[in-house]
Amino acid sequence: MEDRLNFFDPEALLTRWRELPACTYRSWFLWEERIKNFRSIRRGLQAVVQEIESGVFGNAYRGSSLETVVAAIAEQRQIFKGADHAFLWKPKLRIPDIYENPQHQRTFGRFLDACDCCDTEEGVLSAIRTLDQAKIKGLGPAAANLLYFIHPTLVLPFNTAIVNGYNALTGAKVKLGRWEEYLAMRHGALALNARYRPLLSNDLGAIAGFLFDIGAGRLPLPPRENDATAQAAWEADLAKVRDDAAAQRLRIAQSEEDQSHTQVQGWLRDLGKALGFNVWVASNDRSRPYGDGRLADGCLDTLPPVLESSLAVDSIRLIDVLWLEPDGHVAAAFEVEHSTSIYSGIVRMLDLALGANDGLAGRYFLVAPDRREADARAQFARPAFQRVSELDLRFLPYSELQAHRESMARFGQGLRPIEALARPLR
Image 1: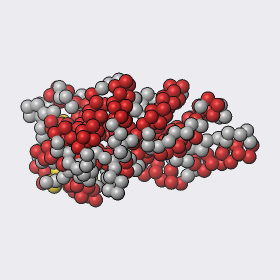
Image 2: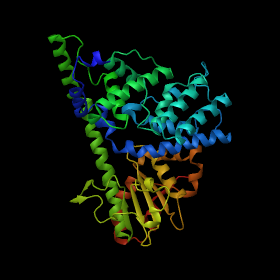
Image 3: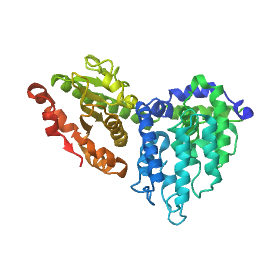
Image 4: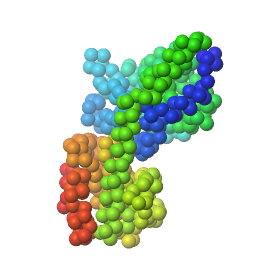
């Protein structure tokens, strides 16, 4: 690996990678929704474990709690596009063999549980070795994508592009589908991460994204030979990547998405204050520009004690908007899902409800573009959310909020106006 790295300057390559809008550092690793999804995906994996242990998981991927979680991962398409392929049932090959074989299913569930319960590298590696020894057909290192959301500082994400990038960067010959090869690649990636950590992160998503972009052709490597023509061709490739029109469209689209999400949060903030509620804005959105100031202007700086004492307080802090009574109890909670995972928003609502103390529970609303109502209903109907039905979760379309927010602010009182606009999801 040292010989391969000596052909170019890795620090210069990493610096350039961090600047390219087409690459995952800007489009995914710094994306705030990525962080918000960690807790919801981990909660989903816990639901998978519980269903397997209680014998109610079933024998099909479609409609299962596992499909719900893997779909939430695959929605992070910047790096996890196609992550669900490894878990889809292939009837001709009868893989992955965790649906028809109850013992294999239990082994898989205990693997997830062992990784969730441990907090050390050795614990994670031991769980992987135990799973590998079971020789479950079709269940290979793609499962590392699940573990990454439990232990992002210990587990390297895995897919074909990451493997190809690692091989191109180091001169290795890692093969797909074998845990021992994945673990060898992980070892090498950890060494690279330690060597260039100032340009990467303790979170292995950064080094994974770097390798992914090399393997996907977004970040061409310099030629091995000291050839001026090849060097010029490489510089031309880099210029093409830098000027790529698709990357520019992606950057603009993400900026517009953030603006739309913030705008709706601002509507809810102003409406809540007009209706007499104290307002909390998600901790990771507080400093966003809105109007002539910040989104959190005029809102609570800290959560009330009744919420701070909840076991789910870390998740509650990330709920987009809360309307609070003077005594600190939640009157209404709002998750704005402009284009991101409906699943994650529902999980945060569930965290709030299940962590409720006296009077903590209130009304729960998913706020999204009108076109996403069918998606919200489909997600809410999944078996994984049977417990959330007690929340009377409601869908509030953008169009209704935009059309009526000013009249509600002037003439409304309490929650009655917004309840009249929202539509029950069951």
